[in-house]
Structure formats: structure tokens, C-alpha cells
Figure 1 (spheres, rainbow, N blue to C red):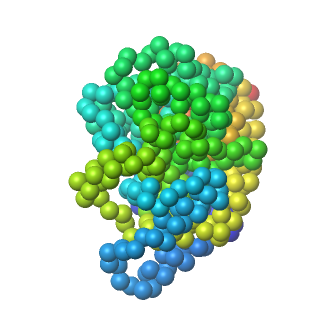
Figure 2: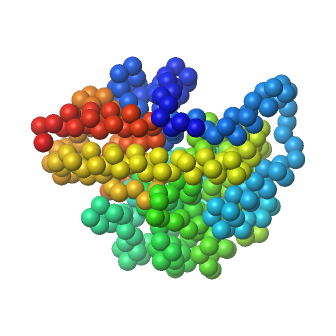
Figure 3: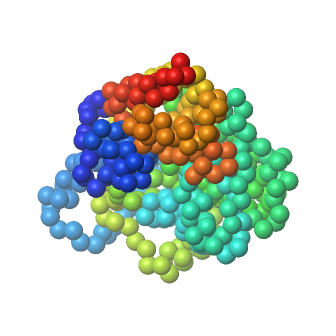
Length: 389
């Protein structure tokens, strides 16, 4: 597998490239798409071969007997994360945004408060508001370019109307890998305020060298309030398969979720199941082990180039492939640095305010692209902000 290969995704119904002009005013012929969180790499050969086998068979009927699929998930969690999962704990949703929506729908009522640690992945707030629940933004502390929890302030913020905490672990967009002590503090916070915890761990395989992800399920004493969410989609760049897993150990919580799934008539897409089963194998693990150092070097080059521009600061990534760049030091209004990035550099990126409180001075850059694209992006940013040099 060569991650250096340039793959032209334009005209392939790829939202990242085919929608960037409409949404961000960046021409895909000359610009660079660095917004949507998918990679510009092909998945590993084991996934491609699984899809080809289905196509070669040529009959696309209903999927039955998902025992190998469940076993693959259990194998991956045990071998890659040291987390023991039982097959009957696993539900399959249409990705984890759908998984989040299902949790909100199952365990809360209209008007309930749902806690987000902001800035955080923008789809959470969209789902919460669309379901007529209230977003409760608990802003994190930016401690010299690294996000930290502010539990005391959050304790004071709670009113009793809050019913759920959605945790992003590892964190998007800040790239934090939460420590055991931090996760224990969040568990205690949830207990004090009687909150269910929905832990979205979709980035858990994309952890930089020197860091280790701890599944929230390994924190003691919270099984009765914990819903775990994982997926193959981010790890293996198969987001279009729309397959995610909601994993629930507690039998009462599991029964409630299963009843809601049944009531809505939800069942997964067979292609996604074939792809996920093929991904969670030794061959898939080998591919991930090749991917991580490539992403780490991309991050190093990106951060070095961006941090060399006076007033710009890219948060050091502990996980994910999403660089979170702070423009506060430029003294510019958001409209100015956003315009320079889109028009001057020709780069489509996610705008910080969509991630909630604390995001106003930031833009999010996706660095999961061939090395030459990252080098080009850095050069473009240096020119677009050249007057600051």
C-alpha cells in the first residue's frame, strides 16, 4: 500500500471534493479539500477483496448469520484495545451519527439537557437540537495549546435537567487522548449528576505513537450508565458503508436500545457488514500499523509549517488526523483568516464556530492525504499569510 498515491476523487460523488465549492467557495480543480473527516487513501486490500467477492457472486440479497461479523468486532476490541466484548452486546447502526441519534432518542425526552464538552464534533449538537433536546455546552480549558477538563466549573453549571453526557474519546477536533485519571473524573461527574455516558470512540485506532487510548468501558463502576460507540469506518476509510456499532454491556440499557431499534425497523447494509468483517482481521491491523506512522509524519510536517507562521498555532495531535489550528495570535477577525484560507490558499476547511464554544478562533484541517498534498497545503498557507512573516 502506497499512501503517497494521488487518487482523483473529483466527480465520484465524494462530498469532500464535489461539495467544497458549493459550501466553501473553493474550486476543486485548483483547490485542496481538507474538511470532511475521511481519508484520501484506499482501504486495505482485505476490504477491497471482500467487496469484489460479493460483486463477483452477483446476488445482493438479505444478509443472514452475522456471527463472523460479531466475532471480528470482539477479536479487534480484545486484541487492539484489551477490551472484552460479548457478541450479544453489539448493535449495528447506520454509522455513529445515527448511533448518537438513537441514544438520544432511546434514553432522553424532549427538553432534556445533553452535555457536550466543547469545542467538539459538530454533528452531536445538530442531532441533539433536531431531536428537541437542549445542548449544554461545557467548555474545556485551552491550556497552552492542549485541552483540559474543567470539572469544577461544569459541576456549577449543572441544573438537574441534564440526562446524558456525550463524550468524544479520543477528542475531535482537539486530538486529545484522555488519560485514565481524566476518564475517572468524567465518570464521577456523570455519577454526581445522574448522567448516562455515550462514549463515541470512533477515532480509537488512530492514536499517535507514544499515546494509548483507554476505552471508557475499562473505567470501573459505570457499566449501568455507559453506552459505547465504535466503528470500522474512520479507521479504514469506509465511511460510505454507514456501519457503526453501539456496544452496551448493561442488560437493562441494552434491552431499551434493542426495543427502539426494533420499533424503527433498523437493519444494516450487507456491504458494510462484509467490509467490517474483513477490516477487523490481522491484515486490517497490519494496514493500520502502516497508516499511523504515515499520519504522524504528516502531522509533524503540517505542524512545523503552520507553527512557523507568526500568529498561527496547530494543536499537537495525540490522535486523529484532524489538525486544529488556532488563529487568535494573528489578531484577525474570523472572516479574515477564513477568507485567506479559502481564497488565498485555496483550501476548504471546517470552520471553528460549528464545533461550539471555544471554537471561534479555529479552523480544522484534515491531514489524511498523500504527503505531497500536505506539503502543498503548508506552502499555500505560508503564502496566504505571507505578510505576517
